[in-house]
Amino acid sequence: MNIIAAMKECILMIGANGQIGSELAAALRVKFGKANVITSDIRPPKEIAEGEIFETLNVLDKEGIRALLEKYKPTQIYLLAAMLSATGEQYPQKAWDLNMNGLLNVLDLAVELGIKKIFWPSSIAVFGPHSPKIDTPQYCVMDPNSIYGISKLAGERLVEYYHNRYGLDIRSVRYPGIISWRTEPGGGTTDYAVHIFFEAIRQGKYTSFLSENTELPMLYMDDAVRGTIELMDAPESSLNIRSSYNLAGISFTPKQIAEEIKKILPNFEISYSENDPRQAIADSWPKSINDDEARKDWGWKPTFDLKAMTEDMLSNLKSKL
View 1 (cartoon, rainbow, N blue to C red):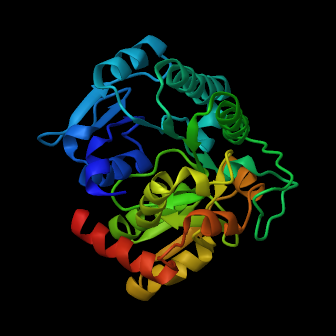
View 2: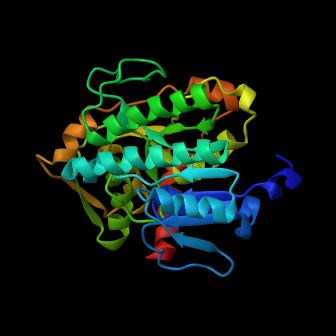
């Protein structure tokens, strides 16, 4: 996208205070300018920098969304508001309501008001016990058994339907676990891989709620943000998947990440709890993801491996904490 075209874009991000939203918003402000990125969430963030625009918004308030769309006339919507997997199991009705009706509100208003371009994230939670665990393909059996995964799979069907029926340019990726040093964990099953770094610096030890050999796909935040923007910049004609693209980075276990941390913090200790409900969720998810379609259609390629990610996480957290 050239600079002139970029300057004409105006983005509304809904659910901007979460792990991905806070960092994606920062990258979008660099790309499009602070005045062209409006962030919103149900509560204000801890701090709002000079020149940044924030609006308090509940994604279930359809008329509130309409008012913001009419006020700012965005060309793109990033819908990140969702209740994550572990929290969703505690409040399944609320999770379904937030994740599905929030999405429907945005889709319907986009059709009504002529907003063509939307980003909505899905998740590896759409896969289930009978999905292939190794190198999970783009198309396979999908039988999620968490309310989060069920809502994301239903959302994938909705966004493809709205694209086919109404011509909405909706783009999506199935995020694996996202690892970042800037924000604390937010209620997801993969959050151990964030929490372990915080506790390694704070306490020198960590009790993992997942067993030592539970392998899950992960992605470093820098790669997640870059990949998301690359997808949104890709020519519409190059996109062949209108549900959600598989996205992969690195797969590892709690034991492997602990061993990598010990190379930098030799006294770090890890232990494992038993009978945590998040273990059952993790056991139903893939161990590794095949993202050939994303690589082919829009040039996706991760840059961080486990070693580089661990070094960057610990270096930044030492300064932050």
